[in-house]
Image 1 (cartoon, rainbow, N blue to C red):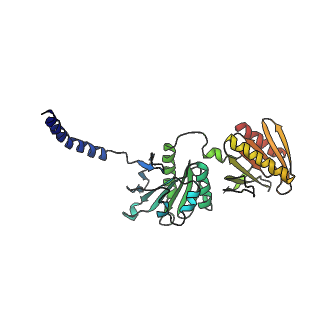
Image 2: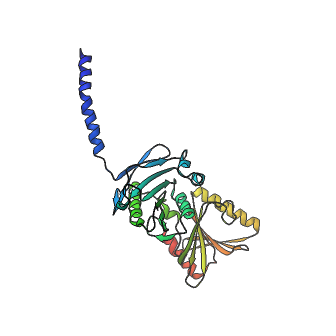
Image 3: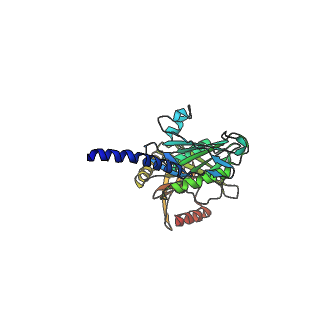
Length: 311
């Protein structure tokens, strides 16, 4: 008798459960988009539903390592080799386009900021610099930028559409979802103020022919007197940096290159008299190294002192 009553109660509850599920489905936050990472976990990212006249389309598409080729066939291997984890694709439209999308937003989770930066340099760095993300470039129909470990590409289906406000809103949403921890992109690409920046590159491997020097960010500066300085940074753990120092010293010894260690005002500098590169400097730091292809003069010494104090 008791089991029969329990069954009747469960049957009576079914309509109530269905109504509750329907109510929950109608009361969601449309600003939140569920990101499915490659490992199967999810991240709630507050992407904008509307920015000015832009309206987000309801359905997002998700791709992982196993099916990325379905979206970018012929180019998937490049992203996989660069550290790719997951991709989410979202469409936005303008009222003038009816129900057709006006732009597509590709959000590549590259695992870490340096990977995202490397992809940006390869994919978008020939555009015009724009104020979005850690670094952003705009061409006639697209904007590419990095936001933490994300490489973001926003591509329009027509010329001269107002992409920048939408890109900036997307960046704000990504920043809200990312933990504020040390080791962000800003740290990985940190350079002293050596002048006006004239160019930035990412070199994945064998920088200057040194097989032990991988994933390097290189930046060139105009000092204002017509002199151009090239500097590079490489980041890693203390153990990795120690191994890199040993590799450098072994290379210099093998090539008969003179290395002089200088300690002054909190700095430890390695001054290299290099017959291949000319006189240049290495500044070892706790989580990365800075190299500058220029001899140590008074101007550079002051710039490095300011940099080390800021560090």
